[in-house]
Amino acid sequence: MKILFYGAKDYDQQFFDKLAPKYPGITFKFIEANLYEETASLAKGYDGICAFVNADISTPVVNVLHDMGIQVILMRCAGYNNVDLQTAAKYGIKILRVPGYSPEAVAEHAMALALTANRHTHKAYIKCRENNFALNGLMGVNLYQKTAGIVGTGKIGLAMARICRGFGMRVIAYDLYPNNELDFLEYVSLDELLSTSDLISLHCPLTAETHHLINASSIAKMKDGVILVNTSRGGLIKTEDLIAGIRDHKFYAVGLDVYEEESDLVYEDMSERILQSSTIQRLLSFPNVAMTSHQGFFTEEALTNIAETTLQNAVDFRDNKKLKNEVRL
Image 1 (cartoon, helix red, strand yellow):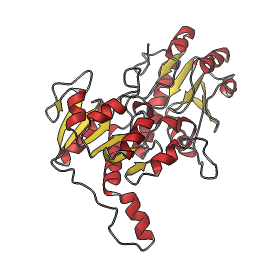
Image 2: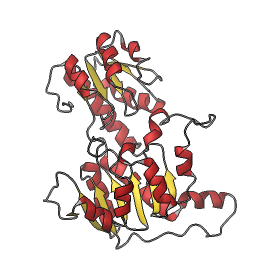
Image 3: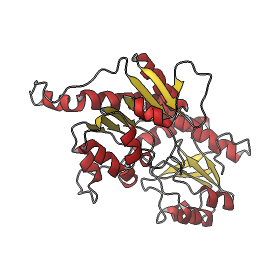
Image 4: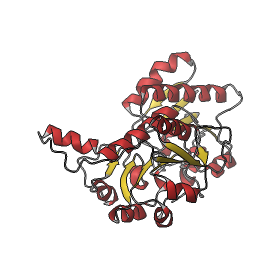
C-alpha cells in the first residue's frame, strides 16, 4: 500500500520512519508541499494520502483525489473540520483520523499559555536577556481558589480540568453531552460558565454550532479580568470581537495556540516575509497576549502516538478490518 504524505516536516518523517518496520507493506513518500487543489494531482499512483489539520481537503480537492484513484485519506490529527466529508462519502473515500494522540500534551500547553500570559514570562525572559531585572509590567494574579471554566469535556478538556484542580481551582464545565459521573468538576450552563469563570479554556471541536462561540455577545457575559485560552480551533473565536474586548480591558490575559488566520501560516517560517493581513500582528501587539503556533500537540509522546495510530489505520484499511477511527457523516 502506497501513501503520499503531504506537508511533511522533518519531525514527521523521523517518527514515521522509526515505526515503519513494525508495519510491513505500508510505504510512505514524504513531500513538503501541503495539500491544495494545485497539489492534489501529485497523489496519482498512490492508494491513499496522509494530511494534517492545515491541509485543504475541500470539495475541489476531494474531486481531484477521486480522479487520482485515492481510496483513503489518513488524517494524522484529531480534527477533521477541513475535510468535505459529504463529497468523500459520495466517492467511497474513507476518512481515518487519530482521535486521541496525547490529551495531556495539549492540556499542559493550555495551562502553560495561561501561566505565560498571566505572569508575562515571555516578556520577563526577554527583559532578563537584556539585563533588565525590573518587575514593572510583569504583575499577574493567583489561580489558586479561582474558578476555571472548561468548554468541552472530551479527553483534552478533562485533562485540563484535572490540571486546574491540581492548582487548587474550582472547576466548572459546559458540554452538550455532560459526563455526570465525574466528581472533580461541576457542569453548568454556558452562560453561567462565561459569567463566573476567572479562567476559560476552550476544548471543543469546530462545528457549525461552535463557530465563533466566543464573540461580542459571549465576551460581554464574561467577568472583567478573565483569562481566555484557546488550544482547540481558531474558528471558535471571532477575532475582531476578541481584539475589541482586549482593547476594552475585558481580558486580564489571553493565550492562543490557534487563530483564524493560521491555515496558510502554521508550521511555516514567515520571518522573512511581510504578512498580508494585520490580524496576527494586532494580537501580538497587546502586552497581555501570548501566542504560539499550533504546537499544543508537539511532544515526543504525541508524535509517537500519531505515527502508530496512522500506520495502524492504514493497515486496517488495507486488510479490510474494522475501521475504529473512521469519520462518518
